[in-house]
Structure formats: structure tokens, C-alpha cells
Amino acid sequence: TAGGVRTRSAYHFQPAKNWQNDPNGPMYHNGLYHFFYQYNPDGVTWGNGNLSWGHSVSVDLVNWFALDAALQPSRSFDANGCWSGSATILPDGSPVMLYTGIDARGDQVQNVAFPKNASDPLLVEWVKPEYNPVIPVPADIKRDDFRDPSTAWLGADGLWRIAVAARVHDVGGATLIYRSKDFLRWERNADPLYLAHAAGMVECPDLFPVSEPGVEVGLPASGAGARHVLKMSVMDTVQDYYVVGRYDDTADTFVPEDDDDCRSWRRLDYGHVYASKSFFDPSKNRRVLWGWANESDSVSDDLVRGWSGVQTVPRKIWLDEDGKQLRQWPVEEIETLRSKRVNLLIPEVNAGGVNEIIGVMGTQADVEVVFEVPALEHADVLEPNWLLDPQSLCGEKGASVPGSVGPFGLLVMASGDMQEHTAVFFRVFRQNDKYKVLMCTDLSRSSTRDGVYKPPYGAFVDMDIEAHGGIISLRTLVSSSSPARRSLNLLALFHSITLVISTDRLTTRLWRASAAGAGRASRRGCTRSTPRTATATCTCSTTGL
Ligand code: FRU
Image 1 (tube, rainbow, N blue to C red):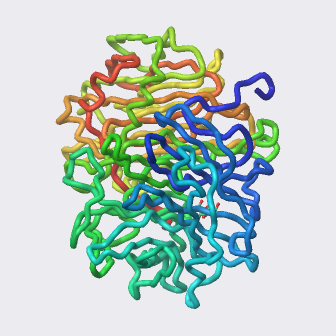
Image 2 (image 1 turned 180 degrees about the horizontal axis):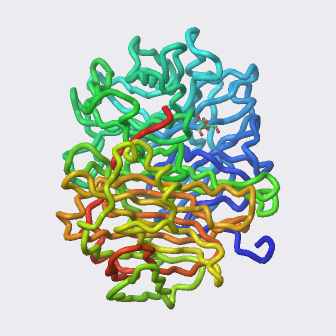
Image 3 (image 1 turned 90 degrees about the vertical axis):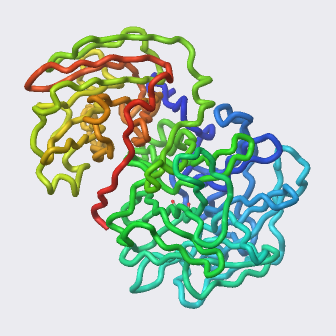
């Protein structure tokens, strides 16, 4: 604790102390989940120069056992840091790691590492062969623009492929493809897998196959023209985006199915999430995604609490029935953390009304709410330019600005006097004869302290609220966090909307601040009976690229 306040998150993966950033090399191996992450063993800041790979194992993605760092700077090819990379499980079942080393000259190079003893279930020790680096920085790429090798996949020609992030000057962010038969000698394909014009550096590429829309598996499939998702972390905006497209494993090119404009890329998440990475989990036939949430404030605050950064709750991801969007849902194992269950039905939430949900005080809650919104026709008319920048709209029309339909939602982490709280809320607008649902998280009141990161987050969710009888369902994981604020660290929009919040004090209230008409809301606590009744998939409106 610090200042008598709980300081650690209960839902999110954290090492015992210090700084962490990107998820690295997640994998399932011989009955264990392995998780590695960018880690500064010496302090609470990023610590350029000594980044290592922290390492933990788990049988259930929920409870973690910490091991010693798997990779630390030690050789000329990684003397200044072991940066992000990925795991590949070879056909004989043994894993191999590819990671970026910052070498003695400061160049970004790609290295390989193997377990010292592949039959050690914990894979504690990793060996970096002498022949590293396996890929030096190419002549046409700047020495600090070349990093983050992906998981390798096998092409029909029997060669392994990896994607590596690079920036091509005056062109944009490139995802390069390298081929190899032995993980030792790698050859670059002349054409990049994908070139993002005007996007700057795109980090941590992740390319994975998606099976038929709506089918909840992420089986590694390939073949010419197979549908894939390319995830890119855009450094300029510090946001993760993805594109659905066709990957040709002969030419090693990726062609987006929608228009090829980075302003129309879909956001993976509408909160504070970056550098995400997925892996295929054969034990449950699913693809699981990890992401980093930079849960930090000022360095002095971070020093007091002794840590910075959390990993988001692992999510299962699959392609929506529309074939365009990823669906996401917290891994089912998270539900094992549910204990006391509270059910509540609130027949009507009046304008300005706040209903405290008694019985969920504590540091952690898994909340499922179903809102029934009557009288949609009263909704305010949407101005078309609002569609371009929903996040600003969430800020301008904060949780306390009344509207015709909404805001309504949850107030979490509320202090007794309500001076501090975080609002998770919706507004419904009318555009011609359609309705648009805006989902926001308002951090502006999450702390009364100054100098704390308190932005609004938000987006229009791609749901037809009318077709769903005016019903919106929301799942919110509330967890303890920093003493500096009562704030959220992740806003995630799922098919049914899911929101993951970090908090240091928990009181959950249902509320509606609407000028006209009364709304109805019912709350189902801690059940998973209806999460899919209101379908809400995220829509993208990208700004600032
Ligand atoms: C993304 C990133 C990666 C890099 C790592 C260094 O957050 O910048 O590109 O490998 O962090 O910690």
C-alpha cells in the first residue's frame, strides 16, 4: 500500500514491482501459459538501456507464478536492451523466441533465443546463440526504426516467415517479411507485407488468420488469399489498429478488404491500450490477445507506489459475423474470480437519478448491466462532424451534460461525497432515421488531484439499438489501482460492450442525467446470462493520423 490506499490491480497482470510495458512472446506450452513482458528490473520508468523480458507462468491465465527474467542484456547483440518479440512453437513442440536487441552500437537487430532445456516445464533458462544477430538492420532502414519480430508461420513452400516493423523514409510504416528455413538465415522479401502510407512508425505487427466469420476459433490457417488480421501499433498516436484482409502466402502480401486508408483502420480498443500481441491457444482452440495499459502518472507518484504499467485482462478474439470486425471477450477463466453475487432490478432510473448498488463495495467487481432505453425518438440530432471525433465529443458532452437520451450508465469508484468518480456512460443520437450510440468513459472527475492523467475515452459503437429493442448490455470489470487517482486504464468495446476499469475505491452506481423522459434500467450482477443480447461492435473513426 501507499498512503494507506490499495495500490495494485486485482484483475490485471503485474510483476511485484517496477516498470513493465509490451506483452512479449505469450504462448501455451505443455499445459502452461507463459507470459513475458518488457521489464525494467531497476526502477519504475521505462529505463532505456536495461529492458529485460520478465517471465511468469500460469495454468489458467488468472493466477500467475513469477520466474526470473528470461532475457536480459548480456551480449554485444543486446547490450542495450532486450526489446519486444514473439514466441513460435516449432513442429516438434519446442518453442523459439525472436526478439529485438539493442546492440552495443545502439542498432536495432533481430535475435533468436532457445530454451536451455526444452523439457523443463517452466522454461526458466534461455540461451542466446553466438551467431546472433540473425537479422542486422538493413541498409535502407534507420538503425532505430527496425524492431518487434512477430510469431513465425510456415508457408506452403516450407519456409518460415516473420513480420518485422520498420519505417521507410518519406513513405511510411512498413511491415517487412523475412523468410527462413532454420531461424538462422533470414531473407527479406522485396515487397513489404503492407505499407502504411503516412502512418509513421508502426510497431509490434501481429498477423494472424481468422477463420470463417463468427466461428470462435483462431486456428492457424493459411493458403493463398486466406482471410487474416494485421494488427499494427501506431507510434504517433500510441494506439492499436487492425485491418482485415487477404494474405497471400506465396507473394507474402496483405491486401485489406476494405478501403486501404489508414484513417479508416479500426481501433482495437478505445482506451489506454498499446503494443498488443496475440497467441493461439490450442488447449481451448482460441486466439488470446494481451495488451499493455500504461497505467502511470508522474514519476514521483510511480515511485511512491513502486510500479508502472499493467497488462490488460487477456481476451479471446475472433471475427464478427460481418467479416469486418474483431469480437473480443475476457477469457472465460476470469469468471472463476466471481464470488458473492448480487442481483438487482431497477425498474426506472429517473432523470438525474443515482441508484447505489448495495453489496458490491470492495476492490474488485465484475458487473453486468442491461439498460433498456425507451423513447429513442426523443434522441438529439447528431451533427455529422461529431462522427469524426467521438472522443472529443465525450469530453465536450461529459457525463454531467444533460441530453435527451442519456447520458446514462455507471458511476464507478465513487467517493462517498461523489467528489470523485469515473462515469461510464452512453448517449443516443438520431441521424436521419437511424440511431447512433456513443459510449464514453469520463475520467475528468476520477481524481480531485491535479497533474493526473484524466482524459475522456469514447467511440460510437456499431450497433442498431432500435433493432435490439433499445437494449444495451455492458460488462465492466472494476479493479483496484493507483493511489494517485480513481481512474480507468482500459476501455474495451466488445460485441457486447465490455469495459475494464481500474479503481482504488469501489462503489458502483447506476445513474441517468437526462433532461427529458425517464429511462428504465435493470442490472444483472455477476451473471453471464445475457451478454450477447445487445450486440455492439466497435466502429472506427480515426483521427490524428
Ligand atoms: C512498443 C515498443 C516496441 C519496442 C518496445 C521497447 O511499446 O516501443 O516497439 O520493442 O516498446 O520497450
